[in-house]
Length: 381
Image (cartoon, rainbow, N blue to C red; front, side):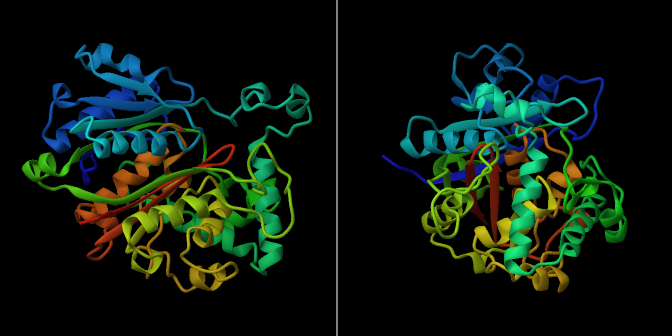
């Protein structure tokens, strides 16, 4: 048995430093907002999926939400945790095992870089001792190679970050709400060449939740957004990923993002040129630039002209990361994928305020997580 799936509720906590709140508190804020948006109670939810990288087990939230006895499964897939939780909720609806499902992601990271343990990723301790678990090095290596191969200037990276801060200034929920000029971004301290400190997102704090239902329930609720397609993929041989910074095989490296995006578009019966607004993983500026091509919105090397022409701005042909993305919102690992979905739902409903795109009908989300996981959705009104 299969059925259509709709998003009937989406909610966020505040993002950014919140010393008075735990990661669990942020999750509860997001769930309350999503249920309120849907006009549902926790007792209406029949199954739930959720995850956090470092703020505890999502299933224990039932102690505060209510002991209703539902199945609540923990998910942990790096930055793709939220997208993976949503895929699980969607599949529960599609299978007919539930009519109302919830996905939640949350985290509260301390200041400073992430400190993953090699052993948790199937790597020897020496990998970390050599400094190869520092993710900024990978991002620098990968984008430097990409810029060189496709003749793109480093100045484009600063323009992407400038857009993120400009959009964040229009988002009352964002962490970074001050615009920043591209020349200041380009001249900031170098982290890993060619990426400066203001081209990166920061480990942050926040929660996001989404309520999905079948068609019958959605019809009764109203204000729903249709999920036309969704897909999740893991890396194939030849990929070039975090914690595996070497290219195996010959020819162009495979791309888990390209695989997931193509599968989501195929499931939706939609092509990239039909998308009106998009969310792309922007752990740093280079990620957004590469994901534009990997997800099918342009060819490799076309990004510089595309960005210079303003095509990815809120008023452009393909608005990207209208809420400021990870760069302006920070990266609470568990929450990022669902924050993206919240933003597209908000845009498609016409409720984005100062950052609203003109009459969007179809939206796209893409999240990427170590060591090579990607989840994408196509949404429509």
